[in-house]
Length: 199
Image (cartoon, rainbow, N blue to C red; front, side):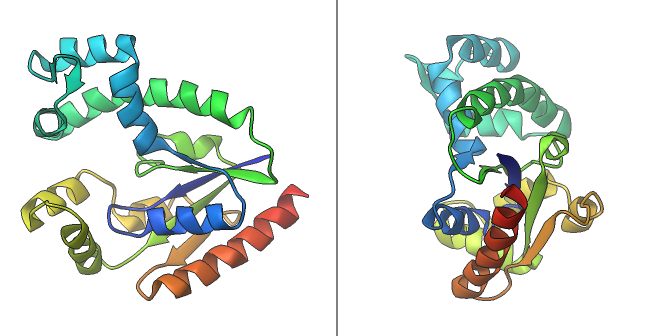
């Protein structure tokens, strides 16, 4: 079974693409959702986060997401520290999930697939791209974040050109500057090719 990475900067539309893959019967592992779950469920990870970022991150066992975000994304070093704790836990969780899937291929949706180095474990990568201003507008429309907060998060991710530079001829680059239907039709073309490869 092929291991396919799905990524794109915040607001690029990777969640929309992931849903399109699911509608085609393909299992999708959501790395960000898994990270949130593991930060609550895994006592080992909870203890490590609290030790690294100090008291007040968990109150009565409940993760204070806004407080963690404020500390973990304050600067590049803090972002690297939180990722160093969370990524290994997510990787182990993904490996266990992948082992029980039954499909021509399975998709791992992750915002920082390239930044984390995880792309190197994939048989193919699907990179979703969209213009910066459009991405900012999409995130503001769907969240309570300000434009400054959105741009701060985008700045913590690699620019599309840097990600594109690590792709190979086996990978796919999808343009999501148009409608959801246009993105879906691109996903369907990718699905057909990946099923052919996985046959």
